Image (cartoon, rainbow, N blue to C red; front, side, top):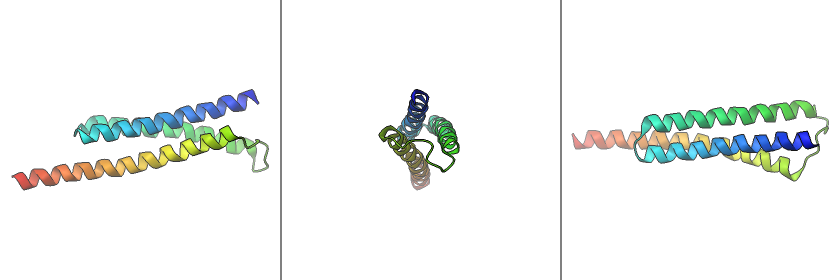
Length: 110
């Protein structure tokens, strides 16, 4: 049981890192720091991949048979991962729009 809790906490940590990096990417994009934004997005993706690996391992260990008890902390971890992945996807789209707006404003001033 202790090992499961540690694994779930690790999932939460990676998901939190993914969400945090995505938001940092958006902040960098607002300042037009594109390389920094891209780096934060890559960090968000890497953290999300690590969290997803843990999630996949948990699903595999459960074998679809209910071998892993569903606890509030496990549900919380899944929620964190889903939100982090959604946040990253939305931030990527917002950054694209920020870049597009900047390009449009450059062409209008010239």
